[in-house]
Length: 409
Picture 1 (cartoon, one colour):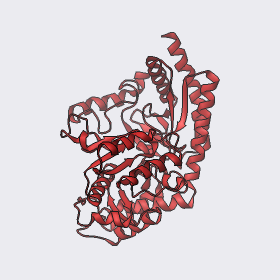
Picture 2 (cartoon, rainbow, N blue to C red):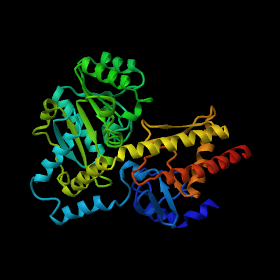
Picture 3 (cartoon, rainbow, N blue to C red):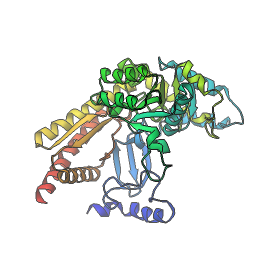
Picture 4 (cartoon, rainbow, N blue to C red):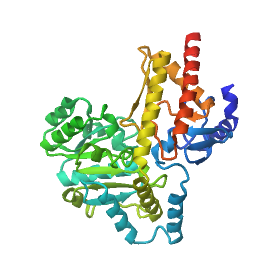
């Protein structure tokens, strides 16, 4: 039985229920159910992760995209350890802060200055704060997930009332929805922030139309590349599509698991951040910056973006061949590009979709492949063609199991 695979994981879950709200520190949700998917993991190396019950998986979540090179990369971690030996967090500024900011700016044609932070949520929050000061406006428009801070969840009952009137949502695939927001709030919107995975298919025309609309109304365009930067040659979605956002947010793949983030942007906009309270105790940590500089070097020297793109295409094409062969109502695609693949069940009946999804992903776990049923996946440099082929072999078997279970129900 699947439940018997995860006995140690369930014991840790029971202990966590007593001391951690929601049982664990991530989303609080199991991949499928607490009993039928692993909740606790012990170690990771390369593209493989091992749960507390001793089961190893080819991992396609990679800590929600934080590991672009793979778990426990020896060069990256050695660079961070070397920095730790110097004292990675000192009382005042360090030359490494300037060197890191310069390295980031070199990689974005639209950037002249950088603000250094620790997490993606901090970066998106800081970007909008900078945009408000630069424009003198208060409202913002958003499309996509931008983190856990209050402004990103304006309708949640746990955040201050009224944020939904300040943080406006638009449909990135409907150009008229953004125009309508500007029409309803003339001269009031400071910035439009967009996560690239919200534009499907990711055509330059759609991105450019959003940016043009934003600029026409005197607002700033913020591209949230926390998830996408450095995964696509030549380094970012904006470089690939020829975009020049006013501000860009980066994190995740930037440092291969070490916590660091940044906002980069035009000098005239970023200058507004001078004197703004954006500092926090750990923003100056240089161990993560050393890890990031090493990650960036490896990404460029070894063609990491081309590697993860090719393997993402291989996985997407293989999954689509399987669903066509077995006549499964599903489609695999890049979200927005092949290095961030996903598989979506699209039967007309939602219950059928739910049953197929649960059965498929549980069967993949049993076969030693970890894929998230609700979140985009991430290909790392540690993944190889053989891993993709093994995954596809298991996917064919898991899809047959899912179909059989649904027909029997």
